[in-house]
Amino acid sequence: MGDGTPLWLFGDQLGRHFHATPENRGRDVLLIESEAALARRPFHRQKLHLVLSAMRHLAGELGDRVTLVRARTYREGLARFGRPVVVHEPGSHAAERLLAELIEEGLVEAELPTPGFIRSKRDFAAWADGRGRLVMEDFYRDQRRRYAVLMEPDGDPVGGMWNLDRANREPPPRRAALGVPRAYRPREDDVDRGVRDDLDRLLRARRIGPVGVDGPRLFAATHDEAGRALRRFLTTRLASFGPHQDAMLTGDWAMSHALLSASLNLGLLDPLAVVRAAEARLRGGEAPLNSVEGFVRQILGWREWIWHLYWYLGPSYLDRNALDARTPLPDWWRRLDPSQVSARCLRTALAGVRDRAYAHHIQRLMVLGNFALQRGFAPGALTEWFATAFVDGHPWVMPANVIGMSQYADGGVAATKPYAAGGAYINTMSDYCRDCRYDPRVRLGPDACPFTAGYWAWLDRNATRLAGNRRMSRPLSGLRRLTDREAVVEQERHRERY
Image (cartoon, rainbow, N blue to C red; front, side, top):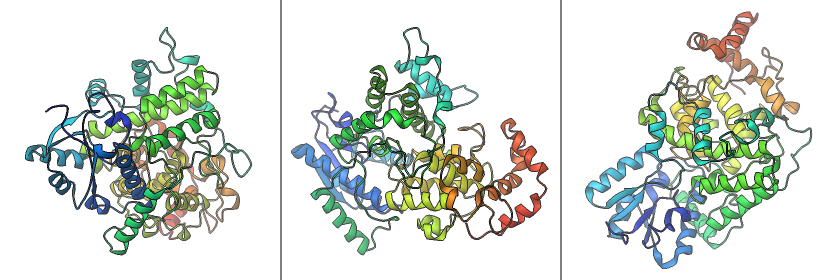
């Protein structure tokens, strides 16, 4: 293999740290739009748009260096290109299996390490092997030390603490919006209009079956746009990010969140460069430590950890179901139809996914994920839904997030306790309950909050499975003292409206 072997880039490998490095700068680039990949799952319409727009924008940016092939499958596209290629590590087990076949067939010469993540799989395995637990906090601290991020010269963390979560759990202010400058918003161009026309054509021909609604592109599709989005966040929103990062407001879907996950997961931003840029804002006195540490934790800690757990735990992890949850996803959930929902928190979150292919992490965990946990949704189906309905969803992103963190289906690999909560938590951390037809304080009767009542019904259903978890001893003790336990369980067993 010589340096001139063309580089095939998947649709999530589009940044300059993939194609403009010294070892790749001399290579031609191949991009393949696979219709089979677009049609394989019910992806959100805006996600399909973003990926195609990003690929076509890169083709325009690199000019004659790029060959963009539109084909039925990746294999067909490679055959049409007619030259062996190299490729970076892909983002799914299915793609990894495909690459093994393509290497055997001679269509792909070699698989290169991915520059889309900071730590190699080999280094992670060396850290993880033999550990009794794979908790993110342990990994995050090791990452901080290894890459000298937010560290003092003597080896202590800046500020003397590794984790400032306690400073980042404030409820929302009592107003309609957080009141911070708006996040970066890209402007659509002729490339976007061409993508929209092509998706309309495929939809009319019933060759794709997306969910959600079309809408103006909200997220970056190019290196330059992603850079502007990052700078806007660092300059105008990072300082206020920390305190309210777990809060939710009906009238402010973005709050102070970075909205950079789609750019990172398309490979448009180098994650370590993003971390260094945030750290520089702390050193320059432009943002407080709690906000910077919270943001760094999401990228250097959480994102890296989720990626590595996907590969380290292997494909069988997707089949884990420690709580034996078997309920199929309802049609209104799959179709993103909030009109079928009365609970304001759930309706707002579901509408956000429908309209933007996005919900921030607390809406995902404590509204959507919490509801799915309480209702016993099958974790494998739920994982696929999160991976396809969200603009930043990819096969590697969701398993540990959903199966592990959200649904506790791995029995405690990714989380030390289930992330289940009743309406009281949502009432504290949002404004959703103020005008809701349900009362978060009520668990029985027509006004019973489906989250409050659902929490106790879920706990009753799983009491035996959770009995050995010390962190669940207090909730289980509360369940035993519940005087209307049987009535609540029976009510939730027959509930049809939420």
